[in-house]
Length: 221
Image 1 (tube, rainbow, N blue to C red):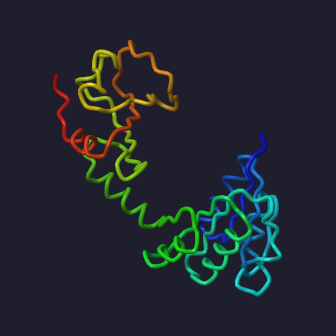
Image 2 (cartoon, rainbow, N blue to C red):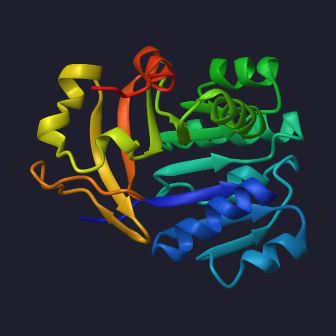
């Protein structure tokens, strides 16, 4: 099965991280920025590094998007460039266009012109940090949707020595354990009859309202 091909427009911290990670994972990446230093920095990794100002007439049209499956537009500090790149990517037939926005209005415009997904990295990071502060017993908090999140939590003292079957977390709390981490080892094929140990970390998925209550639970039998 053919791997997807990506285009990353804008090589700031966000765009560079996306391009580098995808390239190192073996994907073809067209990486574009108007700053030659940024293009040179990504050149060892990207398949097609290109220095170009997408606001210049004809530049976007000169890019070959015919084989691009996903476009990531990371130039949120320049709204005109962001809009131009998004419009062209959609008109060129790119099936999925993800765009970084710098505010609600910018995001609204991007959605109106066809962006498939709009993200606010700084805002989302701030929300995650705040949720980690208020999430009580959770080590980390990852919002998967408006209703569902994944959290990491240490095995509570009262769960040590008990198996997942004994604890019946789905029945008691409405949550699902999807992974167990111990040191650097992560297990996703858990033995539900094996007793949990102190020092392990559980990866748990559940509805936000349930997780909110769970963070304040004493986990008593």
